[in-house]
Image (cartoon, rainbow, N blue to C red; front, top):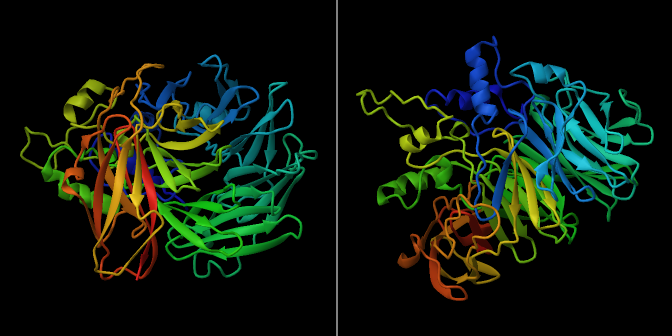
Length: 597
């Protein structure tokens, strides 16, 4: 439905040979397991190489630290910071354990076996996706999480170390599960929990005072009246993305999609019990993540693209924004390698996306989202319209469309070297640059300063620590809006200001590339295409800013300009351009509204 086992098999098969990987459809939200057929040793070996993070090592950069989980092949997914207990809770989708990392003692605590996960633990190819973990507010607190395989919601009572399972009273004939994926507590009522399932077009409501272990008691279903909104689309393709609570309006927001075909944002009024549906533009056809900012605007991620956007709940107005373009590093290239790669890198940016996925609000009002295919986690300031993206230092070639290495001893260009993914020395020798992604699929925010995340296929969790000051900032002119006719050329000025130098204090930095300043290069993206590429429009940085250049000394600025010419065939309307700079650890972009006449 949202992804196919074939797409995962293609990634697994990349262990032995080069293969084309098609863009995933909300990757990894999978009901069917990734490998079918007999469980021979080869199949099991392939599964473990792709999903277990065999031989994985913790990597670091200036902002990111990673931690190997206590057991092998845990396949962590959902994660939640518990400020009261000073822990980060995570769930192993393979081993079926609830674990925690002690934030104060900086070590893993005891992991607790989740009852009923026996088949996933014993079957070498089985697992159950746990997309959402939440900690409730009622002392002494419980940890709640979803369970795709058992079509249930779990509750772990911290005081008694007891697990309770609540079965969802519904399923689908095609998949056998509603695939619960997103949980929200009622902000005004500790007794009520809301959840939705990918394979269910309903809002589920749990009355915690009536919910009983091992039953469906206390859980009610509210069907969502999608009516003819998805007319002509097979119901098997219609999915629910996630939910967000809106206490000010007494509303629950729900994202609904037929991936790549149609998207809707649904508002359910808790008082009137009435649904309203926001019809989305054709290009915003895959809404998934939802969150409300401090101004009560709804922010949405559009899966399968590099787009995220703001929806005004009162007027229905939409403002689209975009991440930076997918880094060449994800595809085994480096923009500074040589000039002959220019065409290749340009083609990469036209056809790939970063996939902003889940989005959440920090206490300081900033919005965070993971870019799964972009291998980054991003922070967006909705007031100043600034985007900061943090690069994840782990890369796995299996989960990427990586360049092939031809066997030099063979005259057949279709012969490829088999790769030993457990031999890092061999990998570095065979490949000039790392390639692939870490599969960062979920994250949780700690006091606006730390982001804890999971690496599903790497057997690791990690954190981003934002205490380290950004080394540079970018400001552009015009600051508000650029109005330009198609085919005409305009010049956008900008300044790169050096704000700090990276320190070498704290944890060991294996990738502390610039301890006292280093090279950066300018980047640009726009909502002219779904990937952030400029499409048929053209843009050029002044020559001295077109490649990497040294970061100015702290407190100094470097000025430059970007020449932009919108394509004559570009549709008239409003767009957003992102201009910024990046180094190996972080990127910084400023949004500019562009009106094409």
